[in-house]
Image (cartoon, rainbow, N blue to C red; front, side, top):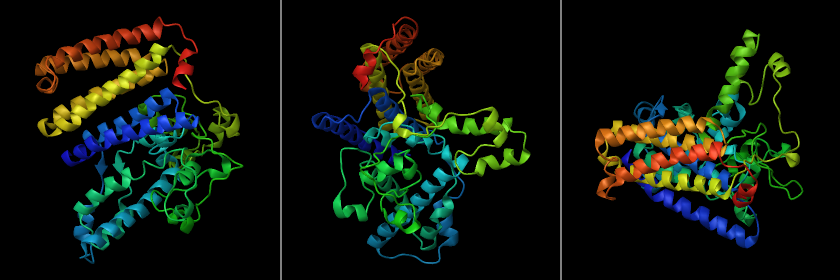
Length: 423
């Protein structure tokens, strides 16, 4: 836990700097790659994934340590070779887990959040799942266990492999010459995120593009068919917590509504998007047939409306960063409570970005929980050691946040200025 928190305390500022660099370069190139509310939603999604991990909400069915102990038939001696084999093995497992997430109906719910953005930029790389609670792909790591790669090596290589997938989520880098034949490039990954028919379910590789070429899922980016991003059934919300379970909720409703017991059982493991015939007829769902006619999801509002979203995101980032650097000083109950507070906060302000009334109830819940923490611990998790009167500042923020939500929901006149500012 502490190692993970320390790694993120260094990675998060790096991600933020790179997102800003991409934005300024896009302005210089006069190439729009960001939409403000979408970017807020993307970064907020990354925060929810981090909070899920800090709360220990990931269940591992079979650990790598157990597999090494019981399955290893060989022990790799060379230190350098261990790390190389681990990285390659991790990438192989990543290709297949990624492919399963795309092609099996239930498992798509574990991954839909990553594809939900209708933009393609570095921020959307942070759209990571909170719904993938159970680790189901342990069998893909058996080859590494068989040759005796120790768990501490896997623990070190895994975050490096994960962070190495950040850079290629951009439209600002064109094709990269001979590297196109070796590694996953921005061009390859633009194809993967596209909803154009010829691009669907292509380029699953995470670091080495060789897996797609070996297993027949490679597709190059074509000038005559520019990628359009998103999902075929648009999520139509900025709330990352809702997006994480939106596909699962659709499956549950279809399984309940269909009259066929066979379909009630098989819907979970059919190809992604499959629906029973009777439900499909009675409860039709709009699917994007022509990507080039797709209308992107937008919500209008004043300049203040947009700036308030950015303020909430930045403050949430600051509060979460304090949590990351304080993990060693907090017990598990405090960590979970703090993380739940931030989860509710993210739910509240992203729902407000949708202009949904549920944001008010979330703000009331956030105020009550925050007030309880301040009252019960006579402070804000030790923040007073860094900032005097921090608990008073948090209390004032909670009250202002509630009042601002009421104002934006019920008193601000909706207009298109927010569209211009956020674009």
